[in-house]
Image (cartoon, rainbow, N blue to C red; front, top):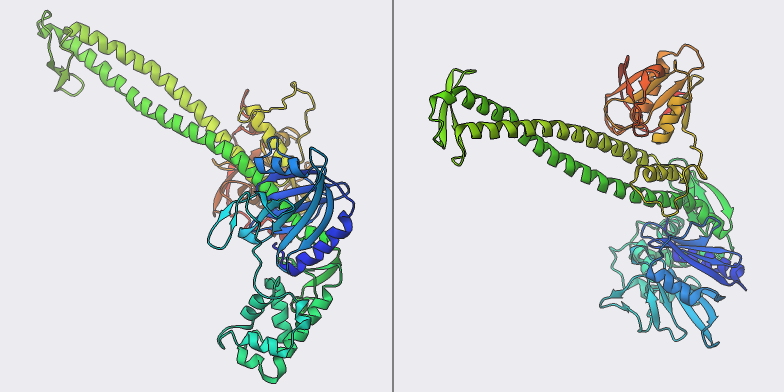
Length: 579
């Protein structure tokens, strides 16, 4: 969730109160656009992603990458060990300035200014010296409006308009003159956003809701003193900003809202409200989303490795299949050689032929065979026998190779499916370890076999009609739930597509048909076919599920099975209502 200027103003007051006397210990950028500034007693998190533009104190710090980029190293060089001076806001817009001081190599105190432009897709982080010259920036920028390049003066991009605080000194005539700049067809929302800094979408909605003139034109605003009503509402809101807290508004099946003021329109729409200190409120609203962002980034890295390997395998299999097609000529060569030897008595043995016509006793028709004129008939036939034999041997080798690569390809598709099911760091670590064991990732911190081996995390567990249904999140868990249950329990898997293993833990009880249906629907939902309909799901007892010796994790063979055709759950929450 992106924050606006008036929300940022509340956060900045908190930053000043909490960071006084602190020293900056370390700067981290775990992924592009997400920064951690670790102070003596607090960790300041700043996200400059277009979809998540905000800042707050946090207790959840991610590990630093092994090889930080050049911008992070620059920040560390100049800022590590610096002392916090102040945190200010430029105007009422979404630009935060952080001032830090540090002694240089010769002992002189240097002041550095960090400008955080928290502006969605135009966000940036710029470091300048005390003279406001740009030393470095996260993003370079050159256009007709302004430039952000090293060595030039930093010019902030501040939106037009005045702050709400400045409105106190403006009278009716000022507001009237401002309104006259807009045509009657233009909306109040445009007027407010253009003439007042730092008001975001949801806070704008509140202002319009309080005025009840969101559909009016500007001629109506000037009538009956409505413009003074608007001024009073804006001043009331400015007074609310003196409270150093934020409000969190929540409603089922709706995104939470965050604001430093009372959102009457949200309360009227059924939102519940809670008051929290600024960073706690921002972290509460964005924490889970940030966690998902981190997980998604890690999933993308694993997926990229696997898809690259998948591409190699598909290319190799394609080449082998072409080779196999070439090998099918062995039978034709064998036949030609046999026909030549069967009719050799009809030809002059001392003569070299370029073409011969011989009788094909299989069809009763003549067959024309092209020969190498350098050799006689017998030599040509022997060469064909030899090449046919070689192609037959190669056919066997190529078929075995295709089978082996096809198994590897199916295994990688299984891992890719498991990557899509990652929910937390434990899931990520398990799949990453599996990829290390399979040789798809080189572990730079490799330990001896068996040393510090991590336990396998728990599979998903669902309850239906008092029966526990287990669903593996990855191949290691799939193997575990197959090994750790009675051989009489029922096992489910989507037919011929990557998916999770599902086991009903019946504890010897008779299983109702409804439970079979739910287990099958879970197997379909946690498979590659989850978005489809009428997915075939095989099921059998665990005693008929075998893992071949040396098989990859999660790979099994099974028999004595039956098949259910089911529709996957659209949302897994459906199970709760059915159970």
